Image 1 (cartoon, one colour):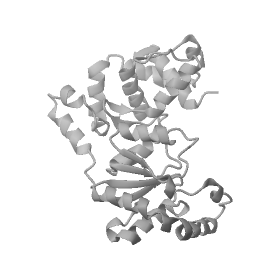
Image 2: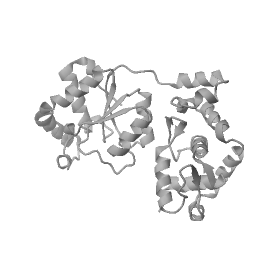
Image 3: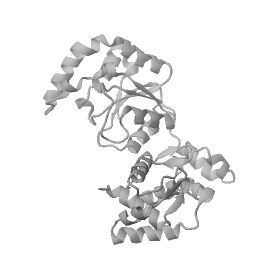
Length: 298
């Protein structure tokens, strides 16, 4: 059983000829998702060669395992089985064919430069932009204007509930976060991208330092039967009374990161800070070190 986004990925690859370089396909997938879909199948982050979707590459590995794509690191290549699995509606297939025809002559550096001009934010970390756009100062200026300004050192909090990995990372980038502090006891997730290994690597790829402080987490067994806000409030009251007072070392470590100039984001699962212990950690930092560490909640 394939996800709808995976079917669309296969169908787009088919419309583009079934065999295309990794760099070209990533740019064409970005253009298709951003220009031709009301709800993009894939989201992207600014990366060393421009727009990049971690999720699309995770899907590529899954599709290779299922024999729907060829095992080729440099190219995206559809197999016969993959072509049969590319089942989308007639309207979607027609849109993809029109997209493929419109972009048929765009490949290589010309395609990359085109995506940079279309969406300069996604080129803010590009290693190629200065060379490809050397004769286009207006495009380079647009990229520079899209770069988020440095933030003051301080604390904020963010949950990943309801967010894709790319959406989450873009929030961190746009808020100029320099260090992500994971305060989960067990940093595992069934949601792609948010287990410790993948999240830390993804952060590293976009220039954000990842740290994990499990001692600030709450044990899973203590988080059961949380049905109302009152249940959460009772849990956090116990956490603030029994756990946080013994974690001054971890709190001082976070303070030291801020002193080094970092804009630190405390992260856990829940979307609402009032339903996540990260707000307790943030409040403890403010109480311990003063209003300079007053948190913001993203």
